[in-house]
Length: 361
Image 1 (spheres, rainbow, N blue to C red):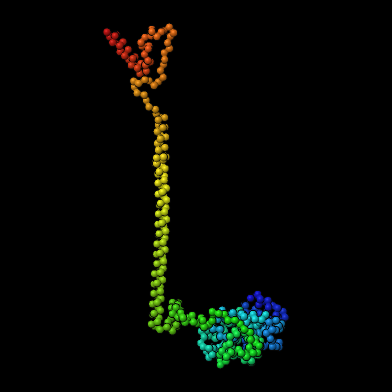
Image 2 (cartoon, rainbow, N blue to C red):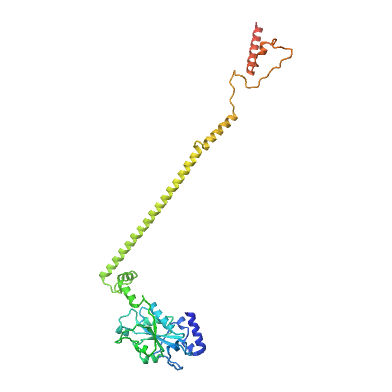
């Protein structure tokens, strides 16, 4: 939108020269909109009457189409801004004038406002679609007012506006062919906003009391003030209990989750321990295999010794028999089996003892 507005302004500035520069083509984007002069719009260029068809074609080229939109604009909201946007873009080159009614007229024909007239004037000057603001605008548009501000067309929604003893205050504008219709934004209006506040009055009173406003500033009596303060304390206690309950539930959930995780880990470790125990000490386990191998190694390192008097385990020496000797001439002693080293030692000892006894004799 900003780019389009700058483009239209540059084209008109080239055609108009100083006339367009005096109005300020970018004021609505960078500065607040200007207030209309009490004397009306003054221009050296003649202001001829335009038709809607001519305005839609972008003519005349030497000046923008002056469109007027009026209202109360209390609690200025997006519905107001959308209506002004439609009025601004209804023609290719538009200068939007917005009239704002005073507090006196509004109170007379419609009712009380939330914002003062100065606040409403200032709010309109900061809308990006507005080029000029008319303060203390009339409730019904007269021919003198239209000529004073050189108004080409009037923009408003097409619903008949019944007020000030008239079935439609825009009826004569429509008959003159100077009316362009805009669409209302559903779901948002000043009355809707006030209805929300009235409906939730207690909530907003408690909100402002909590933010430091006094009961006198809010026009709240002593009993109602204490009631709102008590409700606030009760709500705080409920919120505290709710917070503690949520934290306790979260803690219990964490404990259950940790305990289940711990039990699961214990089960896994117990299964692993039992499997390792069976692998180590079972019938076919590693421990029996180690014992069996160690027994074999011990037997291999230390063999059993032969008992005394038993046939010698050492290899026997077989005496060679001379060819001259015969089995018949062999002595009995020669036919006896070879003695072991221990038996030979005993025989040697007995022969020595026998020799010693014979010498004594």
